[in-house]
Image (cartoon, rainbow, N blue to C red; front, side, top):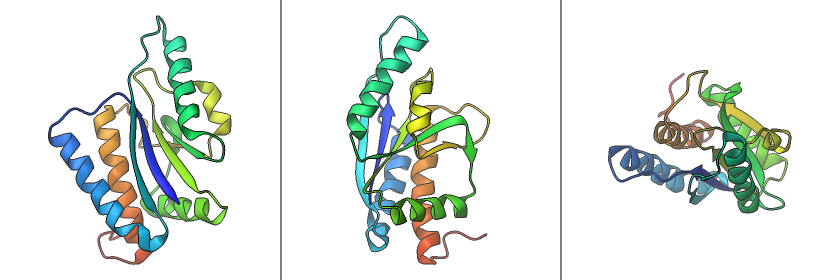
Length: 160
């Protein structure tokens, strides 16, 4: 199963980008043995629409264009379900088991995701009720993807 991150906005060079890249590189190296292939990060610019609803709509359309037909969508949103690391790893396995070929983890813009995206998402995932900067969300997602591979392979990185 191919795994991709779709993010609104660019991550500038710096320690946050380096840390996200470190975990994504680890995921890329450990995932293939489990059938998880790292497909990269797709970044789109923030919408310049006049209002929040217009921005979310435009960004949502670009996300759906990227996912296409047959892609599985996971939205990252503070109102989503909060999973523990083991449950997150199990969810990745479940997505594989149901035949998902390409999973897109979507990090929305400053206004969040278009609400019309929610019904079509396989999962709306939260890293807690707090609002996080997009750079931190990308780092946390990257680390959890890597952690999931260590859980699924029995590696001692994850100690419960």
